[in-house]
Length: 332
Ligand code: 8YV
Image (cartoon, rainbow, N blue to C red; front, side):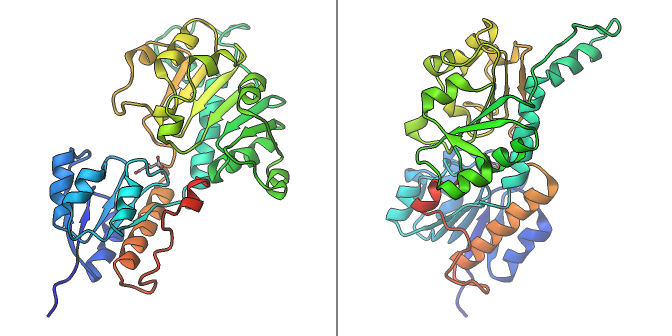
């Protein structure tokens, strides 16, 4: 009898969903570990035919080179900057991600963060909890409106479009910048206008970052970009921390060159720059934009479907539903 393929599940995910893998494979699970160093990842990958990983697992060229049997790496997440996709492709290893199933949940959260930054929600709560509320105050904790303002979206993939659609319910004008302009019918459906990078930064009241991370856009939001923004504006990042120069952002927030910010992602996460932690005019959340129970379950379901199919089993054998392809890279 031939040996069953072996797969590594890098995190304790949802047992009832991961159980589907047991029908086809021997599952190697590493529970109680939320972050794996390169040596642990290389060791795990060396043994297996396929892997289910999250953004906590960096699968780089060295780990891939050491993984002789590896045929599929299935990411639980739409962003896949934790994977060296060219190195996987060079070895013919299938790489997949989980687009679509998290679009609306993530767009909801981006909107919530933007509103929290504009209306100073977490700052106000800290004020109240600290016993500093001395009674209703006409000028206390005044914020900025969303309705009637101009929203900017940098990165107009699926999630960016989801945010744009939500904005029309708030009577916001929507400007966007993307590496390629969207077809006219999608622009119309999103009621969004394409502008260049500088115009986006200069003309919006609230800017949301939703672009995929790549070496090319590392710190694309730097001191120079922030200096173009209105001092009354807000900045929300639900993409990847490395897109923003956090030191420059902290400086702009501390010096009144930007009203407020909301960050769900950080360059060195889970470490957060102490200059950001020290500020009051910033909302900080621990990378939870896709974190509704239903969506996290849907992400794992899709990643499991991908792994089963990528390793030649199940109804979609050989055709994983959401492979990472260059064309899709543009549609985060
Ligand atoms: C996930 C995310 O929580 O999908 C993404 O790109 O950042 C989040 O939705 C994360 O990827 C889990 O691995």
